[in-house]
Length: 137
Length: 137
DNA sequence: CTTGAACCTCTAGTGACTAGAGCACTTACA
DNA sequence: TGTAAGTGCTCTAGTCACTAGAGGTTCAAG
Image (cartoon, rainbow over all chains, first blue to last red):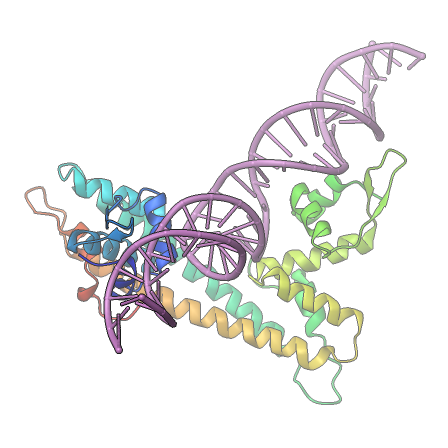
């Protein structure tokens, strides 16, 4: 049995965040000490570790909540967990693509001014002028 | 002179968002009709277009606010606007890199189950188990 | 027994909007 | 000139995933 601070240290999740997860119903309310302080065991540690990993992977809390419910009733878990993973993968690939477009765009904006001291900088104009952009965004 | 709805149509920025930008001080308070409705001209259109483009590029409103202030006092704009662009480019490249790591990670998680009907799916375990991950996140 | 760190609850703030309530105004047509 | 639809107004509250702070209590080491 250990305190919320200890749990925080072991998982890397900040103390207020742990309380927030509890409030959101993502982790069950733990037992308490005589003085009303939270006391956790390895189960709490596992659950929080699962959430942490999901968050690090960029899953929204709602998706994590779904996965947790799947764990609890393991029967139908198969198809759904694949779906969640696939959806998220698609989402991430879309985000990567969009960021690549933005990268190109910013490179173009930077190139619109060579940075020389006597040069009239039109980087601001480039920021404002969408019509110069190659892609859509 | 045109209404907020017309401005919204021309820029692709939603009406409540325009009002929000005004509230945040990103666009000046426009003139009003006799009945107290906002009336815009091409200046308002340009300003909002600038903000829209910046947002599409992923700049936070604070960075856009900086750029707008640079436009107003054009002297020192040079160095600062380059700095803002460079910072943002760095940020975007970092995000792309992190997303690539997550992509690999999700592919690995998906591969941990071949999806066959008799297969014991451990995709949930893979989600929970950070120790299997290649990279840090 | 004392001290200081860690804990408690509660409220409010972040960014960038979005949604809704409950009204007022504008505009096109009869 | 009347009216109805559409658009506009302000204000408040909600979103997500936390984070910060106030003001008080408990725990653990010396």
